[in-house]
Amino acid sequence: MELMELTKEIARRKTFAIISHPDAGKTTLTEKFLLFGGAIQTAGAVKNNKIRKTATSDFMEIEKQRGISVATSVMGFDYAGKRVNILDTPGHKDFAEDTYRTLTAVDSVILVVDCVKGVEEQTERLMEVCRMRHTPVIIFINKMDREGRNPFELLDELEEKLQINVRPLSWPISQGQTFKGVYNLYEKALNLFEANTTRISETLISIDDPNDPELEKWVPESFCRKLREDIELIEGVYEPFDETLYRDALLAPVFFGSAINNFGVRELLETFLEIAPSPERRDAAERTVEASEEAMSGFVFKIHANLDPNHRDRTAFFRICSGKFERNKFYHHTRLNKKIRFSSPTQFMANEKSVIDEAWPGDVIGLYDNGSLKIGDTLSEGESLHFRGIPSFSPEIFKALENRDPLKSKQLDKGIRQLTEEGVAQLFTQHGTRKIVGTVGELQFDVIKFRLEHEYGAQCDFLPLRFHKAFWITSDNAEMVEEFLRRKWNTVGTDKEGHPVYFAESEWMLKVAREDYPDIEFHTTSEFKTAGAEE
Ligand code: G4P
Image (cartoon, rainbow, N blue to C red; front, side, top):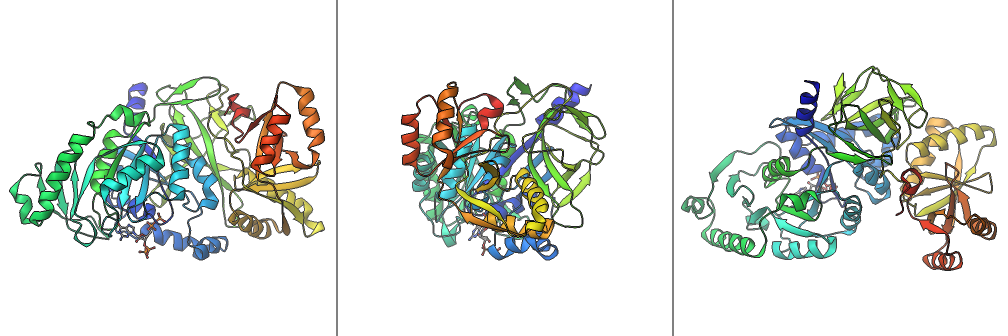
């Protein structure tokens, strides 16, 4: 009985992230999904929530001033019998590492592209991470109500720049001011909606044959003709959609639409729910774990501090990989080798947080944490498991941390340790005592400074260092490592676990180091540490 329930719950879960270059329309699309799911009543709620947060917390001023969303959040809702879990990610590139980590907790991704701008810098980077992780991707080309590029040209650009085969599953009827909606190539159906920016739109017509003369009543003849020609061309040029290729991350289905006007969103959502993978299996260092196994397992991919200094607790975001999670049940904390239980695990439904008694594979729940959980930690029912693919990536900006108030050095130490545990930045040590903070963006230094001051009462300065990237080093040749560390004493250090790291000053210096020390391997992620795997 239990097992049947587990299978049923897994099959109805879709856990994914919507990702995009900033401004492509990620927030708008998320809102429209929530509207369809009945999780919110009018659009604007997600943004309003952002504003509310800024009003209650100074730290969020940073977010407001810069007009970006810093925090990752989870939004769950039920739609057509399915449980949809959307993991929101910060769009700004300075918080890219947060986004990459969130991508370790999803089963698929919807990538939003602006039809005027096409593939942008962050689009490419995010796609790279998806490729690395073999995450199935659906592409939504947004803002078709603008005079953007020709859809066929956009498809070519996606293939070329994102290095993935594409297959359109919906097709725009006209574009720009005369954009009418989309033809659903997957369902072979056409539903035209009234444009509506705040609520679910009324259906104008529903037909299942683009040659139906009924279409001419709603759409000018020339558009109808063009649509019929385009459909013929697409069906001639592209192979029929192959779901297996999509699930193997070798083919990206493409949808067109305008999120703000609700065009093409229902087609996207409904097809997504049909084809997107439910939780299946995850690789741990020890073995592959099937979602359908009865024993609960999962991992922490994000730690979020309470931004209110009066409540210094933290929430660990926990992705369930297998079995049923139960409130108050003791679980095995692999890293600490101890039993731990949670009396008030929370789930996130739209903007609401509530305590739950149970959760299933694919769900992301919030665990109250007083400091015993770290990013990458695994909980199980006794087995020692380490889930793969939650590495630290090499930071790109390095600064030395200087204490400005010697009386507060304890606070500074504690603060920087906790903030780096949350994944805000990475901490390295050089020459035993010098602390180096590494991030992917300048913005995190502002965040760290602000939070150290407001949450820990510590004052600090950051001195820029001319390091280009950090490389974790491994080798079977202990003598060579020793020599390397001695000779490069000025550009080596250790990460938080004490693993040796080389701070290359440039790509060229790395090349030289590789040539001079052929037995040493240089890794750009820390993955090999837990997984025993090479890059
Ligand atoms: P992001 O989360 O990816 O950063 O993008 P977001 O949804 O915030 O959208 C960025 C801007 O693009 C917003 O305008 C939004 O209204 C607009 N937008 C989203 N979808 C569409 C669409 O289908 N067509 C058109 N024409 N615009 C779209 P804004 O002026 O920055 O914000 P707002 O004041 O309108 O909220």
